[in-house]
Length: 363
Image (cartoon, rainbow, N blue to C red; front, side):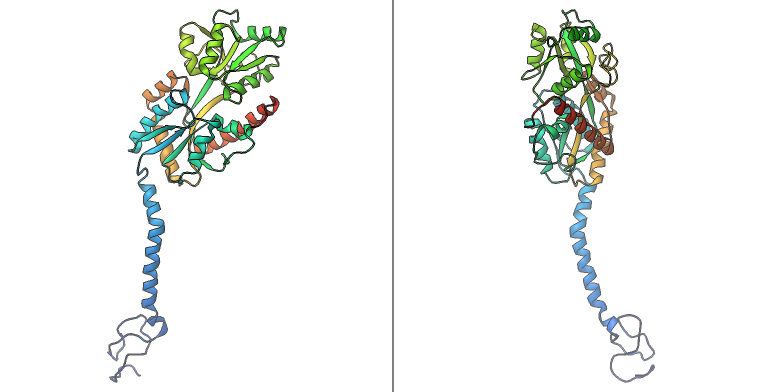
């Protein structure tokens, strides 16, 4: 059919798009070229794909933008009332105000942190179930023959919250006035010095093992069931020295019952400035502290990790929060995901070496 024809039938000349003919014939009707006849089908397919994409991607994007959409569960691998638990609650309350949702602390003690860690590893990776990662996780990597997870692979780190220094304390009535006095006694009396800690495989116990090795002394490490038993044994004269998290010792130090000879960290503690770090007091290459750090299940969206980290940093920058932590003997220190990942790898190596040197049989 020629342009300008008045004969009946739809125009078969190329019009460039589906729809009514634009040519001089003026005939109504859809273009009959194959590409144009397929156009309605293409439009329907695009609509279908758009709906599917919205169903698959849209809710996830909205979930990240609206995070948190409900209260966040913070799994703490320690019993209620301890320094780790109390410090976590202080920070969680401040973070709740920033996030607009409650952070609910759930105590899941037991098995070197395995109970709490397993609960988080197996939770949906949406940031609504978070672990309070601790030094116990680094130790458990070597203390147990098999774990139901890989702590470096199955968790997404948020960043460090704070560090817990250990205090090396003696009974205030003893003649040990400083750490060099105690070391001199230990070297002059091999096998006589007794060191009290909590359970075998704990941070306190392994810190004492590391001290014994680095100091080159022959001392007996005596494990107890808990911190109250260790401190009671020290006050009664049953042991000569105790390795314990600084927080629980502060009231008895303030009351004059205990004397701190040193702290385990590489620098002096702001709450307890007089006793020097162990390495400054004569034991080279010694430093150690426990830590607290939130981590989410692996696969948690980076935007959610950043939201948690920002809320934590804001909480730790609040003067009242920082001061409360310092009063507990906790050094507040907001970290990054990369920093926590590096710290965890370092601590796993460090405590593996101590466990092997102490000949502690994996469980």
